[in-house]
Image (cartoon, rainbow, N blue to C red):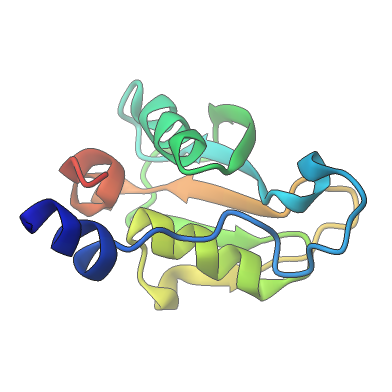
Length: 129
């Protein structure tokens, strides 16, 4: 019973498909993400990547970011549809106030995840599946 309550009420599944999923192929329908480690702790980005992939998101790149002392994990809408960033934030447990828009016409992903020092308080590290 607890497992069912947890799965459907406490941590319901998050839709990994783009909000604007009117694309001809399956790959284009899934939210594409870059995960960047900006907390300065090894292997955190890979934990986040694996967590998101298990939920059906397409993490196309995992790398170190531009800084290593980011305080809060930030989800960045780079592709133009804010709903996609909100879906990723919900999956990770990132508060809405840490979801921003920074459209990059050269970007090939919909969303960037910039991991901050609060990573221990987010779903990938809290063991929430």
